[in-house]
Image (cartoon, rainbow, N blue to C red; front, side, top):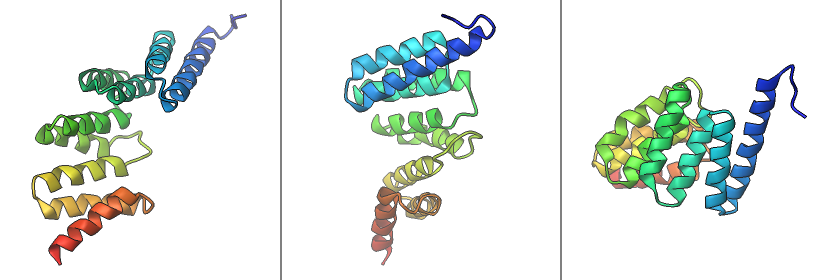
Length: 166
C-alpha cells in the first residue's frame, strides 16, 4: 500500500528498485530486459543515473546514438553528474570522433559529482595518444594512475608510452 504521507518517497523507492533490477539484468547480459527496467525507473522518477546506465546498456547493444541521447538526457536531469560526460566522450571515441570527444571528457574531469575521475583522464590519454601528442597522452595516463593506482589499463598505457620515449 502506498505511503500517503510521503508519496514521492515511495515513487523514488520504486524507481530505485527498477534501477537495481535493471543493473542486475544488464550485468547478466539480459540487455533488452535491462533497458525496459531502466525505462520503468525513468518513468517512475527520472534520474541521471538511470539515463546514463540505460545509455551504457544501449552501448552494449552497439547503439551508440541512443547511448549518447540517453547521456544528454542525464545531463539535463543533473548537469553535475560526471558519468554521462565521460560516457559521451567514450562513445565518440568508439565512433572515431576523437576531437569531438575532448570537450566532453574535459567536462567529466571537473564534474562536481563523480567517483571515477580517472576514467575521463584515461580516455583523454587515449585521444591524445591517437593524435600522436605523446606528452599530453602521458600526462593524462599518469593522472589516471595517480587517481587509481589499481587501474591496470592506464598503467599499461603509461608504460607503453614511456617505452616509446626510451
